[in-house]
Image (cartoon, rainbow, N blue to C red; front, side, top):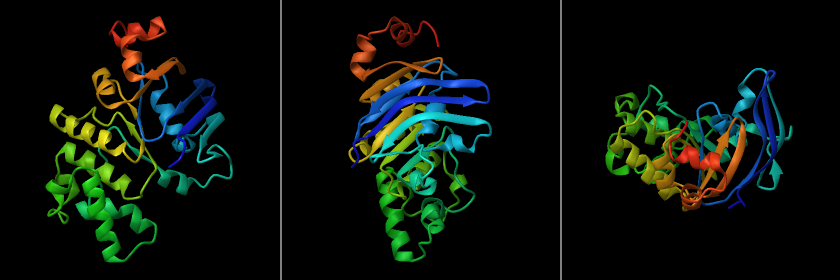
Length: 251
């Protein structure tokens, strides 16, 4: 297990517009860190910096360091395929492929050259269990993934990420399109996964941040206002802007 992720002096521009401003904080290992803040404050942009997804955006320029496993992931020497295997990502809306449940889960393994059925079967079973889907889908491996409920599809996406044995999982508003029951199941999965993974979750849901996270980062206008243990940030924040936000006075 790594020492977590250390972000230092991170700045990002989309063309001439600066979206992140001197961002710096430490993401502890084997814990859940929530990133909260009003729309457009840079939460998702920051999340996508952690596995270099912003590299795919034209006109994007990044300065600063993100330390992971003793190296700066912003280095030109970084192997992006390996980085995105170690740091997986689950997006806002489920992205189930139009294929079977089984093939959705083992997709990354097949792309990595794994062909032996017994190996793929073991990955499938392990990933379903870790994503909390085994009782529901273990006998539905041949079913089209797009036939599943929205909540099941989102947990299937989590299983697909887990199949690659990541050390970190990034969640970008993973429950925004789900009903309360499906949301609860995803949250249970997130809390369970922190036993062996580092989790970072972007959320607009203040109650969700309080339920699942150990630490919370509050952002405004591309900058970090403060970071603290979740219970402390929500009950006695050090910055009045944080207090106004968590009390629902803006955002």
